[in-house]
Image (tube, rainbow, N blue to C red; front, side):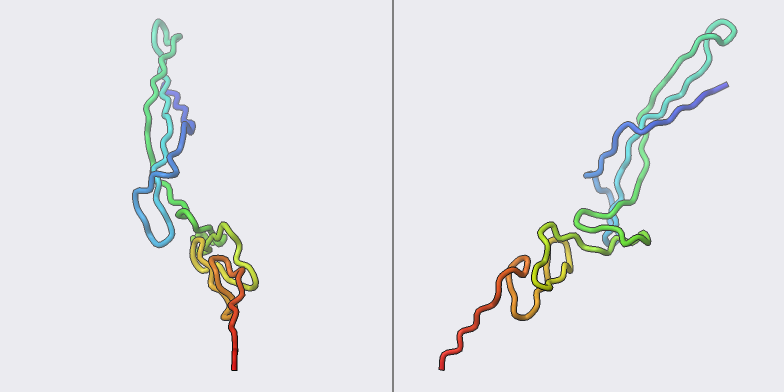
Length: 113
């Protein structure tokens, strides 16, 4: 009789191995334990562990899930002000009268006649 125990050891989230749009595939590592009966009448136990991996898909850095499994919502770490819209990671689209990285500066136009 073989008893098998599996638990999560660690995960390498920063190791991307493939991209599809804004979805990244990472390698997730876990330790797989196998316990076998040994000795006289099978009273002893021997445990062997092996490091295994599996591929997991997550949203790439700067994108988040919309609740339907699609990584299409950009994340702006500094919010877009004055009605600006986050259109890509850390990129704001400003209204015509605003400028700057987060739409916080008003465009000053001097009309001298």
